[in-house]
Image 1 (cartoon, rainbow, N blue to C red):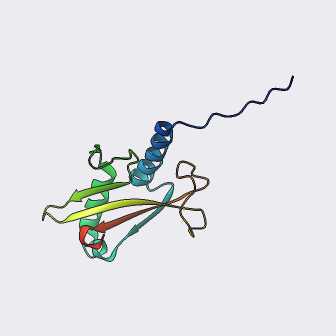
Image 2 (cartoon, rainbow, N blue to C red):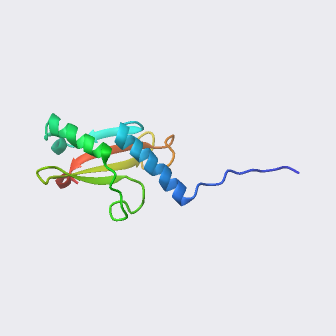
Image 3 (cartoon, rainbow, N blue to C red):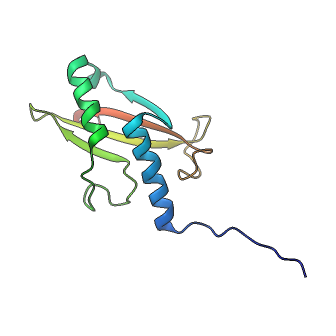
Amino acid sequence: MESTAHAQAPSITERKSRIAFLNDQLRKTGLGGKFVITGGVASLGDEKLAGVVNAMREYDTWSEDNDPHGEHDFGMLTLANSQKVFFKIDYYDTRMEFGSDDPADPEKTTRVLTLMLAEEY
């Protein structure tokens, strides 16, 4: 009798946890994707930009309200002057032509983290 072992597909919870892990890795270390800033964020100047990037890396206030899918793909920071800055992670195929078929698989996905002023969203 021949045995056919099939790998069990990850559960939705495991899949979301994997996506969150990969997103956190990009956000915290810059590894595993591309990082872009908008013109508005660039206009903040180097010192403020460094502070925003540091705050984004340390961001950990995930909740059902701001992360309903549990993927850590979007967040909002508030600067000292009450200006709001968003970070957003999008998932593309490896050629960056289409959306990724499987954001949980880094071999099939190019992550792009965009840092933008709220009014640029």
